[in-house]
Length: 94
Image 1 (tube, rainbow, N blue to C red):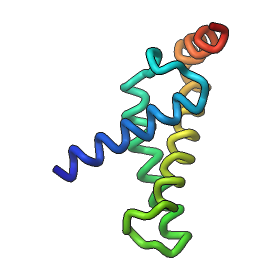
Image 2 (image 1 turned 60 degrees about the vertical axis):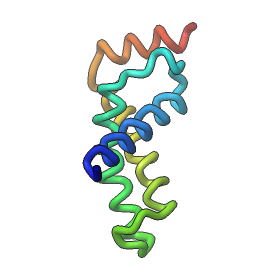
Image 3 (image 1 turned 90 degrees about the vertical axis):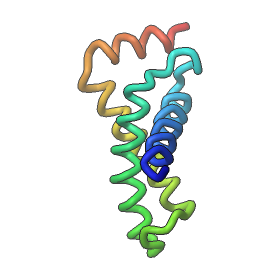
Image 4 (image 1 turned 90 degrees about the horizontal axis):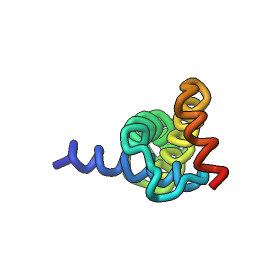
């Protein structure tokens, strides 16, 4: 159950970041949401939680760190993949 919870949390964080970046809910790339959410949550959430002194407990600082980490991963992914960047430009024009 923990693994399923981690995967769902990562997907939700990744999708939320895509919505905050201006994508419509019908244009969410769930593969990118999963990867960005998991990697961003692990790196950003863990780093911010440890810096805030919360340890490994589930705290708001970890959730904020997860959002920031996922945003950085999503932004980097769009910049490094020209196909995704062109698709994102098309969705912003609509």
